[in-house]
Image (cartoon, rainbow, N blue to C red; front, top):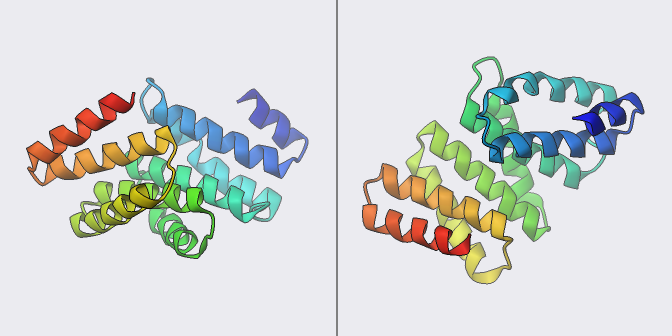
Length: 173
C-alpha cells in the first residue's frame, strides 16, 4: 500500500495501476478475508479519472482481471460489475497475448460461477482446457483453473471429477 500511495503522490499512473492490482491480488490470495476489497473498489474510478484511462492495454487487462475476480467474489451492490465483465470479454477476444487471454478467461469463469451461469462457466472451462493442452500456463493460473473446475464439478454434483481436479491441484502445490 505504501508504494501505491507514493506512486499516486508522484502521479505515476503505471505504478499506481500495477500496485493497485498487486493490492487486490494480495487480498484475493491472502488469509484475511475479502472485506478489505471494499475500500479499494471506489479507488479505481478515482484513478481512472486522475490518469485519464489506463496507461497501456496490458495494464488495463491486468487491472480488469483483478477487478472482475474481486467483484465476482465480493459482489458489492453499488458497482456495475457488467461494465467490467463486458470490457474483459472484449479484451479476451482481441488480445494476441496468450497469458492475458488465459488470465481473462479465468476471471470470466469466476464471474460465471458467482453469477450462477453454469452454461457460460462450462464454456469458459472448455476454453481453458483447450488452452491447457496447447499453452504453457503458470502454476498460479493452473491453480485458478483447478479451482474453477472444482467449483463447477461440485455445483453440478460431479463429485468424481471434482475430486480428481482437487487432487491435481494438490499435486501441483
